[in-house]
Length: 165
Image 1: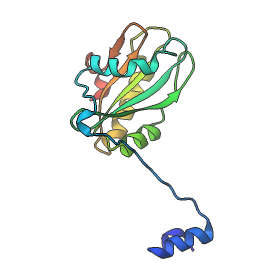
Image 2 (image 1 turned 180 degrees about the vertical axis):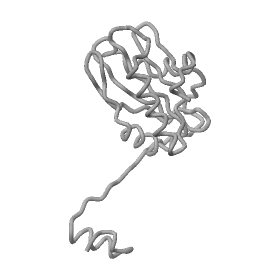
Image 3 (image 1 turned 30 degrees about the vertical axis):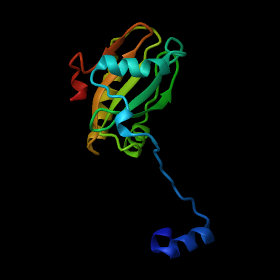
């Protein structure tokens, strides 16, 4: 018998008998929602996430997302991928998983360029567009994509990048 053929308590008996894995998903925040920080603009987004990148911003690329609720309050941030000097993998499934698990209404994509060059590459633009399309399927909006260096940042939203639309 397959797990889907069991109902109610029969499922629990089958789980013990056949020892198939159970997936548990959780997101926990124990404090009041009104204490979560609000991010209204790219500068606030950058100031929120920059300390996370402090130790490696000039050494290797990392890709993170900031997760926001409907009121633009930060639900958390999540590292998605770690790369080398000039590239990083950002798996859309991991982005979707974090966004859905946290019940985010919107996300901000963030990665760094160790070279310090802030202009987005064609790959950056393609990734942004692909992630925006994937998240749109589950009604989660990509508000911005920030590229960080030690001194500054580039905001897709502030620069009217079409891949966010």
